[in-house]
Image 1 (cartoon, rainbow, N blue to C red):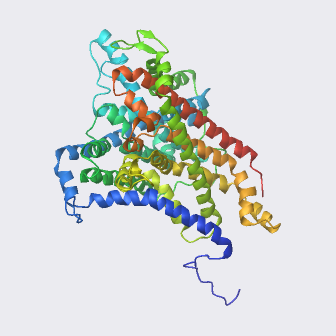
Image 2 (image 1 turned 90 degrees about the horizontal axis):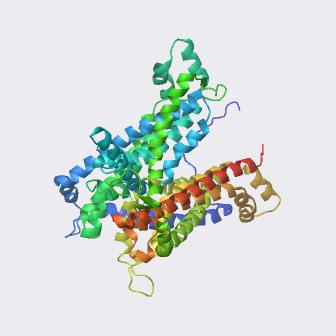
Image 3 (image 1 turned 30 degrees about the horizontal axis):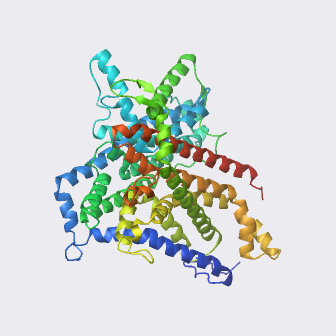
Length: 575
């Protein structure tokens, strides 16, 4: 309009209309819940780290004591080294699989991608024992090398073992994200480079990989974060000079009043956040967008006979290496005797019988804890997704940020925070500390897995057109009835996928549960596996429990993908 002045809206008043009171109350209750079970325990850990244990005054002496101790300095450096080297080795594993399946036409590319994701199904601490059977000092590979060539290779010695296990377990994060980025590259970019004479490694180095950098950085940052925070793998490999094991050992041996355990926890949180910030910084100021898809992603070309042989050889070697832990674990679960020999001396099903006779409590507890955690997650995830994406409530984005912030909180830190916060609080009508109640384990599992369920619920809600809700309300339906009869049913696929993802991953959580289990009768599956694997005599039943854990996570992963695909196919097309 001529003569009018359009002023930018710099700040929006909070919406306090009557239609927002219901979602506002829900958001307030969720915010209080997250404050109690996530923010305050982590804040308590941070506060105690800066507190003088004798006077209670704030001080930096705890951090000074930490860095003055050679063991803790060594643990700090080792954690950084293992995390960085795991990213490097995970890159060497993931990049050929991602590039070959995205760049070339050959049979089995979908199967290769599927097999490449399987290592994520096995919990890393279980993979640690399995890797020792094949690659340890007395493992199958070294026994054969010593027998035929007279030398051995220290694959699993000290930090090498942690790096090897973590690289094999977490490389799918890079594979998944890098493959997605490569498939989204405009093929006209590659065609232009080919027309200008670029090919081979130069083409990959100058065009393909830089355009796929967002996916690579996202995957690499996740690998660094997961390795830096992992507790079970170093413990099972008896590598204690790393930060997460030191935090656990200090709290479990010295007690919850030991300030060094809290200092280590703060460092773990800081570096977890640092890895996420670093991934953002690596992408800042760079433009990876293209104007079109150019026909559907990276240009694929056919391979000659010898090129096919070479690609298949590389892929088969990589897959044989990364799937070796699964084979070793299965062989151990049915081995009667496996000692100083490349393969077991005999086979039996007694280990599974032992598990079903004496370890059913672990399985029942896991089904209960993970089931309740998954239920809590999808309820919270659905509510948070709706509040953030369908309302204009003040602070909704902060609620989403806090809920997603759980991904950067290591399990051992959350466990320590719960011990510190709830150990001095008694259960109602009892003098038993609240921290020893099995329900606290459920809450810890739910908080740790909330980001996964939340993203699934958000994705499901974003696929539902707002016009469907508006149509229902225009016909007289209340907001509450619209959510119950329209929104939630259409989100069913995403909700189920979020539940299954939370359930499957919570079923093998060790870092938080190992801190909170007060008695073996309350212990879940992951804790049971850890206990069995501590002795050579119990490794057979422990491997059988590990196979059960792999089956639970594998089935959960499959059902999650199935529900997601089903929800996409059944999603109404509203224009």
